[in-house]
Image (cartoon, rainbow, N blue to C red; front, side, top):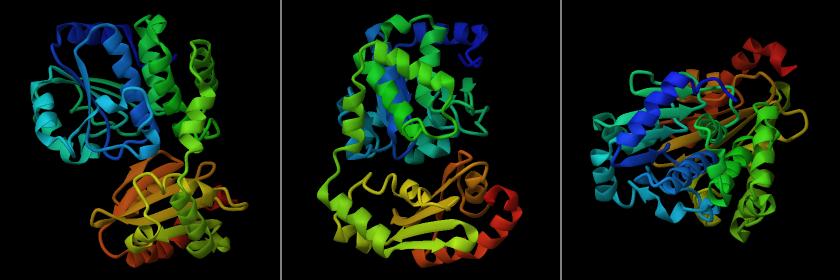
Length: 345
């Protein structure tokens, strides 16, 4: 088990939880499998003990995650602003899961900063905002925040309370953030937790079917088009990328979540060490990078695209035209590859 859940911190957290009349679980904007998994996993765990707990997210998760137990109870700032605002204003304790800085919550940031509630950060991203947190539990070596929620429950000595609902949510977070247990952050500990959750009755095949075997025809057509018509390979830099305009997404009736995982398919091409995906979204160009080995995709985002993230999986943005965002990437790529020459070999 990770050592971040020290006895002194856990004692203080238990004290805060016992006094709280309203506990709110939050996560970052554009929830993914891990943010949903850790939020709902903790939600079911606390609910089972009678805590007054609610999950409040900035916006809706992709449709392929709506099957997750408890997702129907999530309050969304995007669609229920007054309800969400009241929840955060009246909260005594706020869990901040899977984000290292309140700016990652989009429009929720202002409400979080203004709240007088205790803030508990549990996260695995680099450079957490220590001033924002009342208590900080950060481990960048963890495969996912869902893994840390399991560790948190174990630190409380209450693994016996993990049932099919909470276990399914935690397992979903493990699967999605490890790329089905293939990314480098996957550890023996990750597999141990997965095994224990299986022993507790979760149906792994149902999780995988729900995540990966429910593609719409439009999504498959979009992926086929992207790979056939929009894939650019730069063999001299062992790099490939795809970019999609809003008009192209409208052509295939793309919905939230449909493009998730596309950048990983690009990275799977033999010989490719760095992959990028560019799309028009919310008046900005949203950018995702994936890399292999020790190639620092997060530094590429941080230095050039106002973003960051994990070493091999990061995201950023560009304000302007998508063609200009792609051109900027192509322009800076030679220097980036040269600076990390040994890592690309």
